[in-house]
Image 1 (cartoon, rainbow, N blue to C red):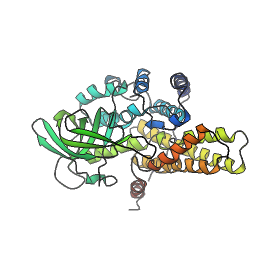
Image 2 (image 1 turned 180 degrees about the horizontal axis):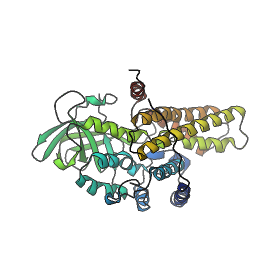
Image 3 (image 1 turned 135 degrees about the horizontal axis):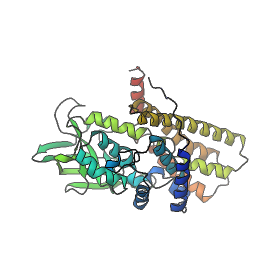
Image 4 (image 1 turned 180 degrees about the vertical axis):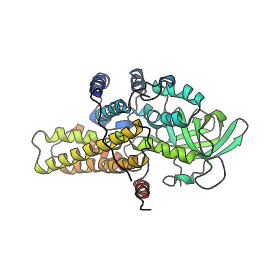
Length: 374
């Protein structure tokens, strides 16, 4: 059963928080509320390079791999400030959050030395090649296949809902390379997105953005050195990777911009119903923050945070979806363009929040199993 042990941020992280806020005030002062509402899906390659130059990517990684050997508490502070400000972090986000840690844990020494420093400098972008048509929640049903050939594999298949595939340098794809039981025979291959046979087609969402993509892999050659971890160990590795994806403050702060806009619109004298809403959201965010910090504490101690991260993700995305709807219902009649544009974007975008990183149904199945209920 999960236990969320308290984990307090050290007092010395406050100077880092002030440093990050000063950096954000200097680098993104003209970013609108609507743009900031994109949260960690906002894209700016130059901004990612600036973060890398400040040492805020690969923060906890060993220095020999381009990291900075700083604490998980310090990394948490940087992420929290970036999300609260609506900084455009998407270019490096997946690489820093999960692809890099995956390589650090399972990758070869050559992969670590060649790839991790480039991630830490904000130079390259990763996308996640997990979901497929007919194999989204049922991830073990992937049909993309890697056939062994001299010097590597030939990969054919299709991936879908692949965020940032249109700009990504690499995809870490889950493919079937061996015959066997559903959860066996799966491997992770790092695919260069410029390889012959890779085709990326954008999928436009409700907001008009095309961050999602479908990716077609047509007899793509992947060298042996691009196997991540052990052949056939992909299922275990993917579950470790998803723990990184589900545990951070992005799982409850994606809608914070409309909450901030709501506070601005109602002013210093909110009505009773507005006060109740503000109090409820503040209390839920504070609770989820403590739970997310507890996960950071587990990571800092080298413990497996998968179960706790799953709970944070489920509760957090529920809150993220509730905030825009409630703010829309309670907003005063007289609003402005900034509020309205931010509201429209998040009401539409938040429908996907309970899908990315694992659907609500799948997450609750994982939680039930951890509680011994299935």
